[in-house]
Structure formats: structure tokens, C-alpha cells
Length: 230
Image (cartoon, rainbow, N blue to C red; front, side, top):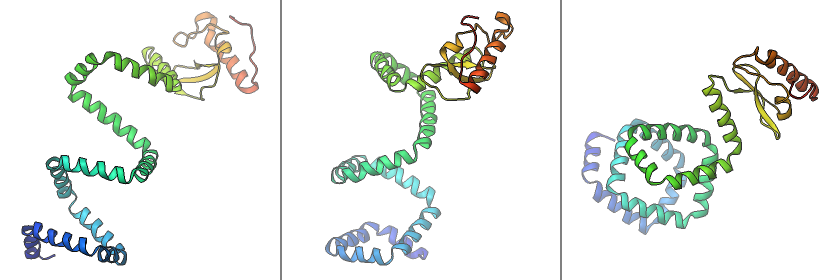
């Protein structure tokens, strides 16, 4: 678009857009037909315009959202009521597709927010102690496996140990540090069969080495050997 045409268009934006809207209201079929015939062309042009004016559009969108907060809120509510099934379906698909990205983004955002708003978060935590405690309990009930892993990692960190898991948790198992960095889930009775210390391997008459030997036999054969409390 030539510069003079663009300037004229911007100066008379309200009048031009008003005329367009009135025409589209009277002749909705024309707009649909035009879009069907020129869909690829319109999409290509829109995409290119977005790339060329990304920063300008971002600023405009932000300003528009600030000045039209109530209008947008009302529009979103009305759109959701009319298109509830479509919106819910689309949101579910989008959530599953971007679950990992969203988790990373939310963690990063949450961390930044807490750093910038220490007083607010502290004040909220003090006012809502019971609510937060209940939410934590519910989360722990729903995420037992995560809690188990997090506890193991926390304990390992406190003891200055690594927490690279070799296998997955199974019923009746507990995590065993085969060395200072690697954790292997083994049957609880096997883990308790020999006293040992990963931070002091020679303790209990080389307890860690003796237990690891039994662990490797269990891995190869599936059998637990040896005398309990050796």
C-alpha cells in the first residue's frame, strides 16, 4: 500500500471500518464467498503482515486489552456460552499438546513472580495457612509417586548424594543408592537385609558392597539371597 493511501486509511479508520461493517451486515454471504475464493491469499498476506509488524502488533494488542478490559471480558464470556463444547475440546487438545512447555513456562513464571513479589506471597501464605495446608495434602494424595521421588531427591540432596534413578518404582520397593549418584528400586526386604552406608561404604563390614552383590544377583535371577540382618 502506498504511503499516502496508508496515511489516509489510518486517519479515516473509524469511518472506513464503519462502512465495511455495515456492508458486511447487509451482505454476509459476500464476505464468506470472498474468503472461500481467496483463503490461501488472505492467510499468506496476514501471515506476512504479522511477521513484518510483530512488535507493533504486540504493543497495540497490549494497549487494546488495557483500554477494553470489560468489553473483552464480556465478549469472551458470550463466546464461551455459545461455543462451550468446541472451546472445551480445543482447550483439552491444546493442553495435552503443550503440557511440557506449559509446565516449564509456569515454573519459570512462578519463580520470577515469587522473587518480584516476596512480600505479597508471604502475606498471602500467612493469611491462608489452613487453605494451603489442605491443598498440599490433597496434592500429595493425588501424586504419591511424585511425592516419593521428591522425598528421595530431597534426602539425597541433604546428604549431598546424586539422584539418577535407574529403574521405576514398583509396589513393595524402596530406593537404594548403589553408589553416591545412582538409585535403584529394589524389594524392601532385600534393602533391609544388610546394614549399609553409602556415605561410608566400609562401615558395617563393607555393608554396601555386600548388599550390592545381593542386589545384582536379584537383578539377574529375581531371587533374594542371604540371611536377614546380615
